[in-house]
Amino acid sequence: MHSLFEAIGLTAAVITTFAWVPQILKILRERQAHDISLTTTTALAGGVFLWIVYGLAIGSIPVIASNVVTFLFIALIVGLKLRFG
Image (cartoon, rainbow, N blue to C red):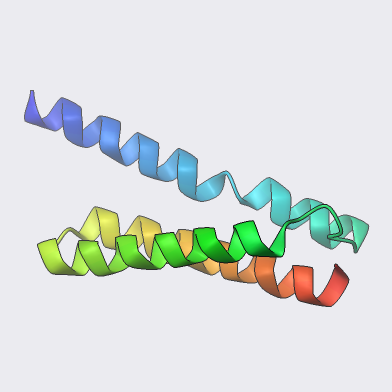
């Protein structure tokens, strides 16, 4: 049963992490980010950063890895918002 929960957690991490890719591609393709909320995206980046800290505290590689990638994607979106928004 434990491996089932690990598989569910891994699947959730992959889905929520890579869900940002279409948004990044859309911003790059259209060269505009007016519809992106800088406040919301920055707050989300802060929350994801805290997940990284939590992952480090509990020593969970899946929590750390998925949130580091998510943080990088969200930081890219913030950068694109500042450039194109």
